[in-house]
Figure 1 (cartoon, rainbow, N blue to C red):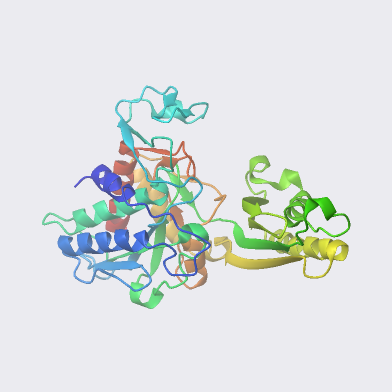
Figure 2: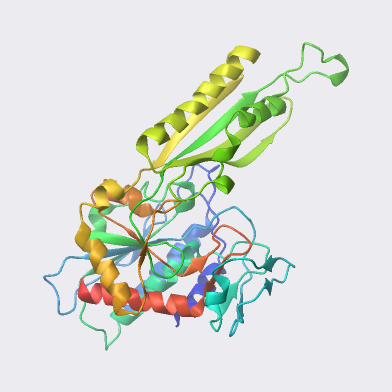
Length: 399
């Protein structure tokens, strides 16, 4: 099975995660895909492949010819963003001409600087009704295709390779039940990046924030001095955050507050945010601003009107990974050996590797070859996935 066939097979399983769920994994279809992957690994000959009770998939490919080399871990996540909900209906545009692409729904992909560079390649896009799921099923497909190569009769010499596929990365819970001791790698790489060649070891510090507003509903005909409109108070909360510190106005190392979801009425309203910053002190200040706004609004509308729940998701892995420059050099060398120019840049997001790095497994992030994640205009090329599979093979052969 080719990497493209695998990818199309995996995206057919809808695995959107949900931060409103308290189960692990947060949605049942993640286990459907997990069992599919575990079974596929066993059929390849990965004898210890399994999915645990939390939906994590593990497997180990013993070293061939290089037993003294450190064990390398390769990790990707099975869940997809809920930014655009619905089943994925992908299609392949052969020999893409580099121009605008009209999706089945009428959505047009155009105006992106990278599009002309993809001319001549085979583009995989959505119907325009959902995300594609290249984040991170492309990473899953690339690792699985590597596993097929390493378990074949003509497999090249390679180090011991530890495989893991995680649930719920998109909601910041991808390593909550990760069995690091069982995993057994000396260091690792998440395959969860974007454009081909990306090599990342800096990420945001990240937290989620739930703002709950409790109001008082009174018939509008007799509401004067009685109604406390929770929906309007929630709008006040949002208005007290600086508008220039939103994702659509930031880049590079600039942090942000991102309102992901809002709902409510006069009686109760809810806002859900993610908070991001590369700098630890600025990140702490951003988090502190949320309860400060709640306190200000409570002074106006009464104690308990606004409550804030903050939850840390991950930290900037730079302070850990930069202590292990050799694993970054190995990745750069693998890219270059495959004719790909590596590009080191800060992630304006995060990966499972951030949390794992702080738990003792230094784990930078590698590209998948995809673009426009978390939206209807998400895309990836067949050639990029094939090249990343080649890069991964080179990495474990030289590790």
